[in-house]
Amino acid sequence: MQLTDYMEQILALGLLAEKGWSAEQQIACLYSCSNAPEVHYYPLTITKQNGGRRKLLVPDPLLKGIQQAILRNVLERQPVSPYAMAYHKGAAIRKNAVVHQGKPMVLKLDIADFFSSVLISDVLSACFSSGNFLPQTGMLLAGLCCYRGYLPQGAPTSPAISNLVMASFDAWLGDWGKEQQISYTRYSDDLIFSGDFDAGLVQRRVEGALQARGFLLNHKKTRLLRAGQQQLVTGVVVNEKLQVPRAYRRAVRQALYYCQRYGVRSHLANQLQLPENIIEDGQVKAYLHTLLGKINFILQIQPQDGECLQGRQQVKQWLME
Image 1 (spheres, helix red, strand yellow):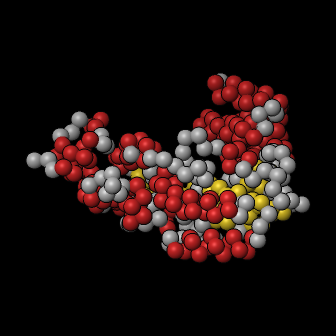
Image 2: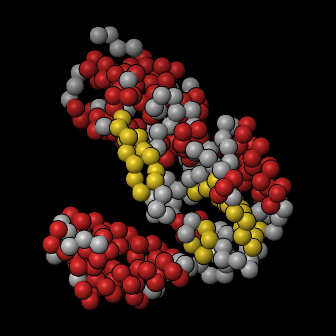
Image 3: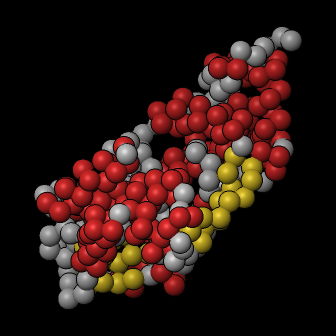
């Protein structure tokens, strides 16, 4: 097979380099994955922290490996908006929260069906444009990252792509916010504003700009929080000093206490309302990893929390047993 320019450009990205396949086999495989996404995704429903359900589309190992290579070799090499506070190296919930600390007003808006509202045309223009890739290369890469013409939530490439698609919107809104003395950040589909401003005006302006780009607001999740209320930004209280909500900290400390007093397996059995003898080791490990994640979240915001520092060491010890 005689390689064309775009084929050489695709192969240079090393999307299937570890397979040891011929150039012809690699190109055929990439087109197969791009043209028949239904074959390479499976649905998965997970439980969110608030008890709700989230539906994902997860790629199979072959497509996932290709997408991870696109993420490493293309997407992560592109600059990210300073207003984007998720899905990139150096991003942190604390960095997002501190922008809005001690403000008289916090407005939170949510983009409805965020990932599925990003179309393949958006992906092509934001990530694989003709300025960087030959047209055929860009179309193939965009196809490998999309499912039936939109961005699937569950693919490893989707978070980074969403940041790149929203970059021009973030820049426009951030610049406007500076003119109005309004602080702005975006954490995935959450748009957060703080300062002293006309919330109705901000919401109308944002909604119009989003609609022009094919997005809608989820009005059920709109929140306006004033200084006299608990102002919660991505799970962090930002009224005066940054802190994790008291109820969250209490629940974590209580879990540590019960694990220490009764044993992890016994506590988990009580939580699940199951006999202790049917609790499997894998369930215990999964629970401990979840508990460790909650402790690390608290320590990210309140690094001097003595109980959590001790608790983290204890959980790590349990995981090694």
